[in-house]
Amino acid sequence: MSTTAVTRTTSYSLGYRVRKGVRLAVTYLVMILLAAFFLFPIVFMLVASLKANESQIIRDMSKLTAFIPYGELGLRNYRDVFAQMPFARFMFNSVFVVGSTVVGGLIVNSMIAYALARLRFRGRQLILTLIIALIIIPFEAVAVPLLLMVNRFGWLDSYHVQIIPFIADPFSIFLFYQFFVGLPRDLDEAALVDGASLFRIYWNIILPLSRPVFATVAILQFLANWGKFLWPLMVTRGFEYRPLPVAIQQFFSQDPKVWGDIFAFASMITVPVLIVFLLFQKWFVQSVATSGIKG
Amino acid sequence: MATQTATMPVVKKGLIGQRRNEVLMAWLFSAPALILLIVFLLIPFLMAFGLAFTDQRLIPNPNLPTQFVELRNFARLFRDATFHRALFNNFLFALVVVPLQTSFALLLAILVNQKLRFTNVFRTVYFSPVVTTMVVVAIIWTFLYNPGEGLINAFIQAISFGRLGPYDWLTNTRLAFPAIMLLSIWQGVGFQMVIYLAGLQDIPGELYEAAQVDGANRWQQFWNITLPQLRNTTIFVVIATTILAFKLFDQVWVMTRGGPQEATMTTMILVYKEGFKQGRVGYASAIAVLFFLIVLGVSLVQRVFLREERAVR
Image 1 (spheres, rainbow over the protein chains, first blue to last red):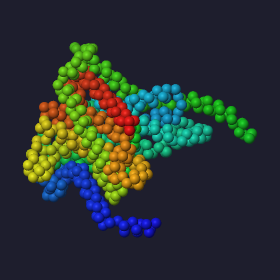
Image 2 (tube, rainbow over the protein chains, first blue to last red):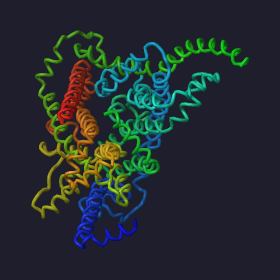
Image 3 (cartoon, rainbow over the protein chains, first blue to last red):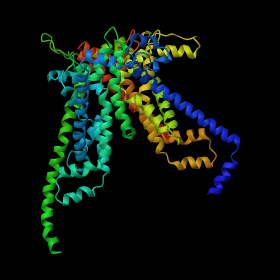
Image 4 (tube, chains in turn cyan, red):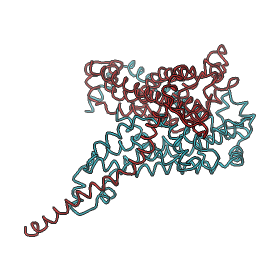
C-alpha cells in the first residue's frame, strides 16, 4: 500500500501538481465570490441597522463602507422600532400563528397518515388518492373563494383565520405516509397481541421511531408559513393579529422612509431565524432534500 | 401446551373486536385532517369553479343579488390587456428563471459536493437566503436597486469603468422585471441546490470509477454520468420552480405592485387586486381557475416531455 502511494506521488509531474493547485485555488475563489454574492445583502442589512446616523447610511450606500460598521454605531434604530410600533406583538403573532400551525399540523397530518399507512378500513385507497390529488392545488388558486368563506364565517382579523385553514396539508400527509409505510409491521402486531390499544401503538411505538419525519415536516412547514404574506395581507386589518411580514411591508411603504429603522426591523425578523437555521442546519438540509424525493 | 390452547379462543375473540375497533380508530384518526382538507381546500377549490361563472362580490350588495353570468368573466379575461400582460410576465419569468436557477443550483451543488475543506460552510452560506423571508429580501434589494446611488448601480459602474449606468431599476419598464428575477434567483436557488446535492449523493461512486478507468475526463463524466443520473431530480426541480414562477407575488407587491405601467404585473397580483382590493370575487375566481389550469397543464406537459426524453435515451 505505502509503496504504491510513494511511487504515485513521485511519478506525479510538477506540472500536474501545479495544475492541481491552480484548479483548487480557482475552485475556492469561485466559492468565495459566490459566498459574497449570497451574503452581501444580509451583511448590508445588519451593518446598516447598527448605523445610528441615517445620513451616514445614505452616504455609504454606494460604497464598500456600506459593509463596514463604523462611525456612530448603536442600537438606536432598534429602540426606534420598539418606540414606533408594537414590535413584540408582531413577533408574538408570527410565532404563535406559525407555532400553532406547525404543531397542529404535525398531530393532525401524522394521525391520518398513520391510519392510511397501517390500519385496514374501507375507503382507505380513496382517501389516499384524494390526498395525493390535492397536493397539486396551489393555495393561490383557492385564496379568493377561501377569503369569501372566512369572511362569511366572520373570521377576519383573528389568529384562527391564519391557523386553521393551514393545519391539514396534503404534502405533509404524504411525507408521513411514506415514512410510516416503511416501518416494520411486526412492531404493531407484537403490541396488538400484548393487548395495546391502537392509540397506544401510535403514541408509544410509531411516534418515537418517527422523529426524523416529524423534524422534516416541522421544518418544511415552518419555512412555508413563516414568510407567508398574501393571506395575512388579506385577512388582517389592525396591528393586533398582524404577523411580521405584513407589519414590515406596511412600515416600509410609509413615507418618508427611515432606512435605519427599516433595516433594524428587517434584522430582527431575520436574525432569530438565521440562528435557528445555524443550530439545526443539518436537519434543515435533510428536510429540504426529502421534499425533492417525490419527483 | 395446555395454557396455549386455553388462551387461543380469547385472542381470537379479541381480534374480531380489534378489527371493528381498527375501522373506528382509522376514521377517528383520519377525521380531523379530512374535515379540514375538505372545508378549507376542496370546497374553496370547487367554489372557484362555480364563482367564476357569477358576478359574486366580496361584500355583497343587498340591492344587487349575485347572478349567474355564464362565460362573461372569461370573455372579459380574453379582452383584458392587463391579464394578458400578467400571463405573459409569468411565462417570461418561468422561461428565464427556470433554466437559469436550475443550472445555477446544479453548479452550486457540484461545487459544495466536492471532497474539499469548508464546503459545508459554503453550503450553509448559499442556503441562508432561503431562510430569509421574501418580504425582507425584497425590502433590502429595493435599497440596493436605488436608482441614483444604489449599490448595484455603483457595482455596475465600477466593473464597466463608469461606462454603464446608473439605471433606474424599479421605475424603468424594461428593467423592473429582470431586477425582480435576479433577487428571486438569489433567494430561491439554495433550496434547489440542496435537492440537487441529495441527488448527487445518490449517484453510485462506481460509475465514476469505471469512467475514470475508461479515461473519461471531467466534462465527459458530467455529461454522461452526472446529468443522466440526475434526470429525476431535474424533473422535480424544473416543475417546482415553474409552479413557483406562476405564484409570483410577495416580492412584486413589496417592490413595484405590478408597475411601472404593468411592467411587473403577474397573475397573482391581478387576483389580489381584483378579488381583494376591488372585491370582484367572480372575476378573480375566473383568473384563479385559469391559473390553476395553466399550472396543471405546465406540470403535465413537462412531466410527459421529460419522461419521454428519458425513454428515448
